Image 1 (cartoon, rainbow, N blue to C red):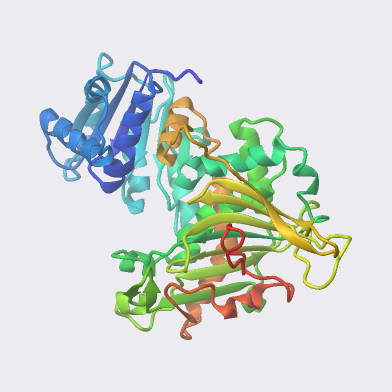
Image 2: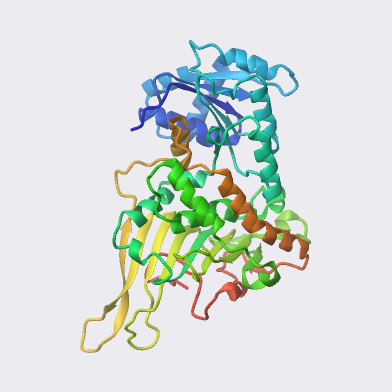
Length: 492
C-alpha cells in the first residue's frame, strides 16, 4: 500500500451527475477501506451558494442512493467531516482569488492540491488559466495536479490547441487525462496475464496469431443523448479512446518496470506504430452503420434516425476498423476493432484466433481461440482441440475457462482506482499527451472522410448481429466476428 501525502481534492462540477454517481460514492468507499490519508479534505466547487449543512445533507442523499443496503455511520461521520463547499459563481471576476483564500487555510486544507475538472470540455483551458492566474498550479512547495475528463479535444488540432493552452501552466507530470476504462481491474489485468505467464508470451506474436478482435458492443441505444451523439459518433466516442487503449495494452512490449513512465512509454510506441488507415481504400479498412428500428429483449425500439428526428444524418452508431501494427512482433497481423450500439449482446472482450495447427484432421477443424472477457464477465478462456473418445479419430473443441473475479474478491469501481492513483501520484492509468495525439491522428482521416460522404449509411436492425456487409474489412474468407464467450452458443 503506497503512502499518500496529506492532500485536498478540489471537485469542480461537484453537483453534477459524475460527482453524484461516481466521485462522491467512490471517495466514501476509499475512506471506508482505509485508503484515504487521515489528513485529507474535499472541497466541492459549484456555481451557486449552498450552506455547509445543506451540502452535507446532499452528500448523504448521494450515498443513500448509491448504497441501498446502508453504510457504516462511523465512516460516514469521518467522511462528512472532510467535506466542504465553495461557491464559485461564473459572474464573479474575483471568484478564483476567493477560492485561493479559502484553500490557504492550512488548518483545514492540506496544501497538496488535486483539481478534478468535471466541467464542460470547452471550459478545461479556461479553468486551468484561472487556477494558474492566482498561483494555484504553482509547485514551489507542494504538488499540484489537475484531472481533465475526456474528451481531450474533438480531433488532433483541437487536442493540440488544448495541450498548448494548459501546458503554459502545467508540466506533463501535473496533467491527469482520465479515461475511466483504464481504471477497470480487468483491463489492468491484461498486462499481468501476458507477462506473468510463460505459456502466453512466447506465442503472442505474428508467428502464431492469425488475427485479433477487440470488441465493445452495447444493447442500449443513444437514449436522450441524441444531439451529443450526432456531434460525436461511435468512432470518436469509443474507438478513439477506450478501444485503442485496450489495443495498446494487448499489443505493447513488456515495460522495463511496472512504473508509470515505463508503461506509458511502451503504450506510446505501439500506438505510434499503427499504420495510417488508407483513405483511398477506406471501404476495405473501415465500415460504419446505424441501427434501425428493431427488437431488444422482446421490446420494440426505434431506429437512430427516428430518435434523432433527422433522416439526413450520416453519423455512425456502429464502427469497425482494420488496423496493422508495423513492428517486428505484429507485422502482417490484422486487428479488427469494433464498437456498436443496439447490437444483440453487450460485451467487451479481446478475442485472439491462432493460426491453423500443423496437424489437420478432416474438414472444418476449429482453430484455437484465446478470449479475455472484460465485461460483463471478467474471465480468460482458451479453446483447444481434443480427441473425441471412441474408435474413430475425430476432434472437438473443449474449453479451459477461468473467472478472474472470484467470490470474496474486492469489487472496485474504475473511478475509485483512478482517484487513488491521482492521490498517489501514479499516472500510469491516465493518458499521456503522446497517446492522445496518436489516437486522434489515426481516426481523424476516417472521421473526415465519413463526414464528407453524405450517402445514406448502412442500416442494421436493433437487436441484430453485425451487419453482413461489415465483413468487407476481413483479410481472409474464413474470418468472422467472434461472439459469445460461452462455448455451445453460436460463436459466429
